[in-house]
Each structure stands twice: as C-alpha cells, then as structure tokens.
Image: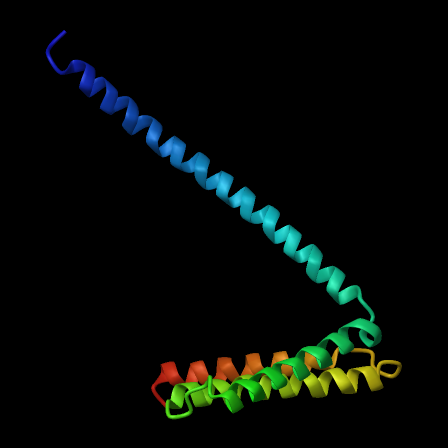
Length: 143
C-alpha cells in the first residue's frame, strides 16, 4: 500500500458520507419545522375557535389600553427621545396600533352578538393590501 493511501481512503469515505449526513440533517430540520408549524397552526385554530365576545375582544381592548398607558408614561417620563424622527414615528405608529386595538376590542365586545366576522380581519387585510401596493410602487420606481 503506498504511503498516504489511508488518508485518501478516509477523504473518499468522507466525501461520500458528507452529503448523506447533510441531507439527513436537512430532513431532520424540516421534520422539526413541520412539527413546530403544526403546533402553531393548531394554536391559531384554537384562537380562531374562541368566540369573539368574551375573550378576544376583551384581550384586545386590554392590550390596546395597556400599550397606550405605557407609551404615555414613557413619553411623560422622557424615555422616548422625541428629537429623533425615527423614535417619533415609531412611537406614533405604536400608539396608532394600540388605539386601533382598543377601538376594535371595544366595538367587538359591543357588537359580538351581531358580528359574524372578526373586525380585526379588515384591518389586517387592508394593511397587507396597502403594503403590497406600496412595495409594487416602490420596486417599479414610481415612488
């Protein structure tokens, strides 16, 4: 046997087994992600199965009010630097979202017996449509 033949044999075996190991690990990762996504899908189905009035709307109204109180408190204490335009727009965006959450939660709690859909779906779908339209305008070079 020539010198270094064991090293070439080892490298040959490594080159044959390395793609198999990588493919096996990729399948393990995909299986793990699929199990996680199934868990997330199951949680989402449970969330959608909850009736609108008692829990969803109250949670939304509570979360919106809590977010507004936190933002107001942070701005009064001075934790938000308003001299920075990014912080200002971020704070205004978060406050707007909290306000929308509060209003949708209150309206959903009041109109739950008459509503056959979730009013927040209108907000999410319109936000998605405006975002897609803005992306199309931006990437087309119009804006």
